Image 1 (spheres, one colour):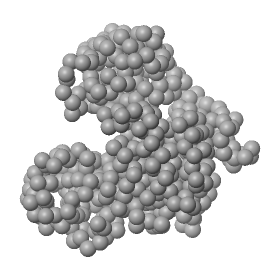
Image 2 (cartoon, rainbow, N blue to C red):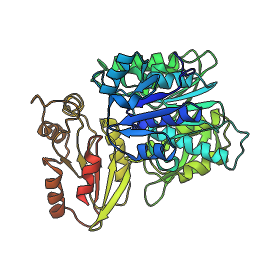
Image 3 (cartoon, rainbow, N blue to C red):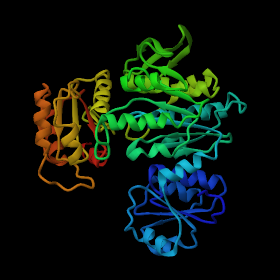
Image 4 (cartoon, one colour):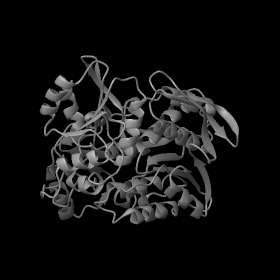
Length: 460
């Protein structure tokens, strides 16, 4: 199936991070697009500004004259609009399949994959595209269409429409959805034991990434972070050209690393022993230095000038929910980060430790019972940079509490690794505790992918 020949494409769940970008790209390519979602959001508002019709709420009538339906993974077969499409014989395709179909329309496709960091890397590349397009030459191949799985301020959403035949997209590993893509350049930032509600174990996850690399054509390019042993092994196995980046022992490395008073790193981009130039970041953390290095390698592989890369990364600010400053109260700064895996949490807290602060207090809300059981009840060392960790009740998401695991079990696991941790059930109680416990100069960072982002506002 292809998009050609369809007169009206209806997207169910059009307000999602990826779906709204898909709608914008299809519209830019000349297709008639409409959609529905259960609630308004900044994404639906952006679509309305672009005159893409969006209906709030699901109803069979919303399909109108649509002759193709695209639905997000969250939209199940019992959705009334999907049932109406089935009744009328309208073809239906899932979001990742549609993204793969879309990628087939470009001669150069860059898929940015990895269990952590792909949204940041992709949005960094998008900003480099903006700078290439507005100062260092439309002749460069970086006027690309970019699809980001997050809300990016400078894009007014999560997509950039470019003029060139290049498509750059996040390549999500969940349920192996990235296997629908046809990349010519594949980047893998890391491989970790995530999404264990779908994958059997880490070997199953690695095999999915191996299949992703095997999608590359003979003249394709595999870019990987050599700091990750699993990625390094895949690079050694690859039959295509490879290019590595990492702290050391890689084709591209950061040299002469310094940090400003806020902990933001600056570094020389080193290639084969020579400095290509210096990048001064406005974001915190060594993991973001590696993310910036990854974006640099992608941009250089697409012939972007280094000066454009340098300017873009120098002004780059993190996307929403990535180390986002939420506000200040009584001389106590409050941040939020989307980190919800032990590796992400450790990176975020290590970065926060480099900020000026008195004490570092972490509030971590686990986003499902299954993740609590598989990831957060063992003896991993991932929160040791915090002076105190507060753990509220587990956010259930789509799951039902079977009584197998509780937030107290997470606290017990943290204490076994030497972390000072407390169970406090609600955010109202957490605020009351912080009011009596915190001192001027303390930093509070909330972590998680559930409703903790909205609950954080209660702490201000």
